[in-house]
Image (cartoon, rainbow, N blue to C red):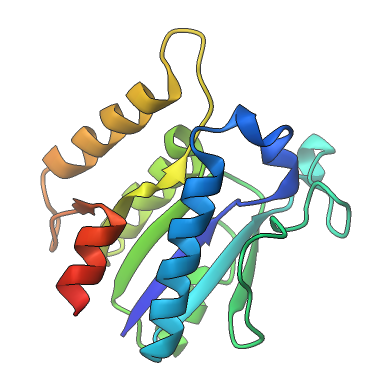
Length: 180
């Protein structure tokens, strides 16, 4: 079984929306993917950062909420996390095991922090990982533009020495064509 992970697409990370690269395009592509996953009886899992340790993204505050443009369904799972790694001290691993999920499709924010850490953690746990190249985002960094950060990490993931599975990096359109 497959699962779409939507990581940290929360209001506080997108103030303003222009802070993150291609915010509206990323949201649109995540919504297309989540619709596809639900229609095919696969799982959609939202991962929300609970930043209580940092005194930000506090549960039940505006900054903690998922972006209002994201399509959410009552059958979707919500996993709360407190570190960059979506697996660290969370219910994610148990949720995946309970649902016989072996293949993860990763989207969300931020490419160079939570996405990268989760990708590497998932691979080390022997999940088959696909990173949806145009469905994750980040902000410009002092030394690198957001598009270059995304390009850099996409290259790293596609070139990593595989564990049981090689990380696949594909764009949304290619992925939906592969599923068709």
